Length: 394
Image 1 (tube, rainbow, N blue to C red):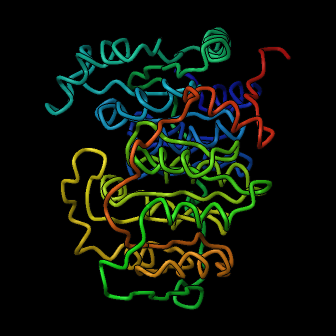
Image 2: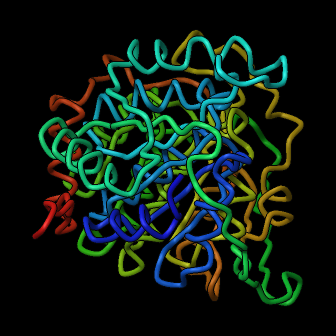
C-alpha cells in the first residue's frame, strides 16, 4: 500500500497535472488527493469515454493527463481509445481499477470484466502493468509508462487492485462555483419555420470559417460529413477533423479550452453525435469557460450512413444547454444565428447554438488528404503546443 501523495507527486514531477475520470471506491484516496490540491486540475466526467476525450484535449494543449476509471467503465472508453487516441497518436496515462479481481469476492456484475480487463487492454494494443503498491515501485513504473508514451504517443495503462492506496480525506469541493444562471444567461430564437429555406451544412461551415480568426481560434469538427465538408470548405492548420470517436468532439474541445484559456475553441457538432453523448452538455456547463463555443448543426438524420432519421426533431438542445449552465443558448434555422453567436457576450460561460440545416452533402465530397496524425501535428504546431512529458530526474 502506498500513500496517494507518493504517486501523485512523482507523476507531477514528470508533468502530469491534469486528471479526469469517473470515480471508483478503489480510486477514492487518489481522487481526493488530486481534488484537494489547487495546483492540480480534476474534471469529473459524465462517462469514461468523455473522460478519455477531455484528457486528449488537455494533452493536445501540451498538458500531460491522467484518466481514472473503474474497469466496468472501460467498455465506455473503447471507442475513443481505439478511434481517437490511437488514430491521432495522443498519449494518456490510464489508471483502471480491477473490480472482479480473481483474488477478491466482489459483486456479480464485475465478474466477467474482472476476467477480461487485461485481455481487453491488450486487444486495444494498450500496454499495461499493475499499479504500484510499494513506494520503491513508483519511479520505475512511471519511467516505463512515460518512455512508452514519449516514443509511441499512445496511452499506457496501470491496473489498480483494491487497497493499493491508503485512505486520504477529501477537504475541498471539485465542482467550481457558478454565479446564478438566470442572471447570467442569454437566450434567443432565430426560427423562420420553413424547412425548405434551411441552409446546407457546407453553407453553415463556410460562414463559421468567415467568423473565426485562425490566429486565435481553433475549430474542431465532429466525425462524418462535418469534418469532411469543413476540409472541403477551407483546409487550415487551425482545423481539426474528427474521423472517429463519434460524440467526443465536444468533450475534447472542453479539455483543450480549459488547458488553453488563451485560445478560442469552436466545436462543430451534429445531432446524432450530440445525442450519443449528451452527458457532456452538463460537464461543459459546469467546467467550461467563455472561450468555448459549441455549435450543433442539426439536419435530423445520420447523413453519412444513409440519412436514417435521428430523434432530434423533437429535442430542444438549446434548452438542455441552458439547463446545464451554458451562458448563451441560441436556436433556430436562420443563419443569422451564427453571427449573433459570435458577437454574444457569455461572460464566463460557454456559448451554444442549435442551427437547423437541411440534409445532404456535396457531390464528390473529398476526404482530408492528410493522415489524422499529420492533421493533429499541424494543429499542435499552429497553437504552439508540444508533448511536455519530462524524463525522470530531469
